[in-house]
Every structure is written in C-alpha cells, then in structure tokens.
Length: 231
Image 1 (tube, rainbow, N blue to C red):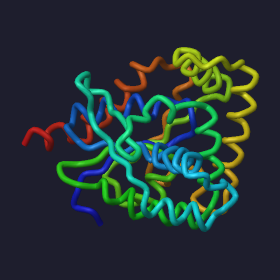
Image 2 (image 1 turned 90 degrees about the horizontal axis):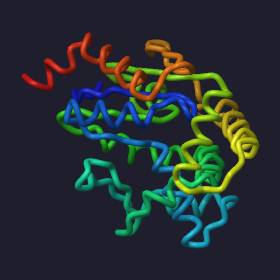
Image 3 (image 1 turned 120 degrees about the vertical axis):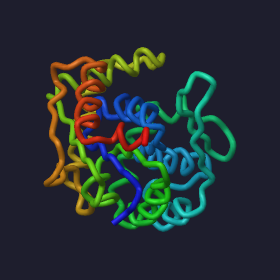
C-alpha cells in the first residue's frame, strides 16, 4: 500500500472529472495526473512518428520511451508537453480523443503505461483522474470517486467544450463518437470502466461544474485531507 495520499476520480467522458481534479489538486497542493492525457499523448505520438494505430507492438515500444511532461503555466493551468512542445491544444481535439480510445483497448499498451502512471504518486499526494484509477492503477487509494451523468448531459457538455475550443463539430457527431468511446471503455477485456467497490459515486447530470467541484471538496474535507495537508 502506498504511503502517499491518493485520491482517484474515475468516470466516462463529460462528467467533470478533469475540472474537479485540477481544483482539488491545487487546493491540497498535490500533484495531478490526467491519465487520459497519457493515452492521448501516445495517440499523438503515434501520428507524428507514423506508427499505425493497428501496430500494437510499435505502440508498446513508443509508450515506454516517449518524452512527456506536465507543467503549470503562469495562470496555474496544467500544460502538457510532448518532446518539449506544448501540445495542450491539439491533445484535446476530438480526433485525438477517438484515437486514444482505440489505443487504450490494447492490454499490452495499458500494461506499458501502468508503471508510468504509478510514478506520479509522490509526496505530498496525488489526484488521479481517468477510467481505472481506483480499480487498477491505485486500488489502495485513500479516497475514490466515481462520477457519472446521463448520456445527453455528457454529450451536451462535450459538444460545448469542443465549440469553445474552436472545433466545428455537430452535436450528432459528438453523440456518435461518445457512444463509440463508451462502448470501448465498458467492453474492453482489460480494465473496463466500472466503479471501484469502495468508490463514492456521484451523478453530475444536473450539476454545474462548480457544483461538482464543491461536492467533491466537501467530501475531501470530511475525510480530513485538508487537515493533513496543513499539518
């Protein structure tokens, strides 16, 4: 069992994991792991190095050696770097998200990234968001959340997010892509998406982003994490 305090936030796309995770990490002064970013980085790296997404062996090799880094900017936002380049923008495109979802179905790729994810668990603590943080990557985490929301709510949020980033995509296309991704996440043979037995489950369908954050912060406070962080 890790001696580092770890809080996991799992759930499908569009439930508010990332926003809540970043805020909690900042308030606790913990490190933050967006595990999905690792798969998106691998998909981006595969594109840039001309590795076919069907070439599982080459993807595994790339997963073990690709140059990645995370860093806060002057506004406190977490930036993602690939081979020294800030790729935070292109990393969030819907096309990369779809490629990442395909890459994540390979058991050998997930295995290759497992140890890399666990290296993020350092003092004083870690907030880890993803699909299998509480079930596979950090099963002994001190606190686990599983966020969910209705399909319509998630599709609407994802569509709004993409439009705000300047992507010209229809709601119907977002719904189709989200449905495909949900199917892959829930039905893959290794690390399928489901709540850990000891996870706190929260339905965010009718909640604003701030309400999601505040709900999780209240539970984190009740569990005593802020007292430990200020000790």
